Length: 117
Figure: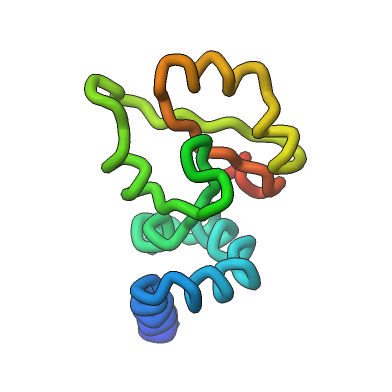
């Protein structure tokens, strides 16, 4: 079982090299990956690398947590995220405006399982 999981995660990771193919895969299986992060403690770190989210700076594109961290402002030591029912409701949140004014990028989470990730 571990070998199958390891092989599957390896295949998913190799898919990330082609953004278009990975986005197609991710749109179909994102909930499963997020559930895996929640339930599979042994592979949590590897699965976290596969997650993608919308962000306040790139709301139409998905971004990885590593890309978000690479873009963090100088002196920023926390990951900011905002959870809502829909992407539009999160984008129009008054909390987001305050962080935008401070030039802080915020991950926009709108999938119900995101609260557990």
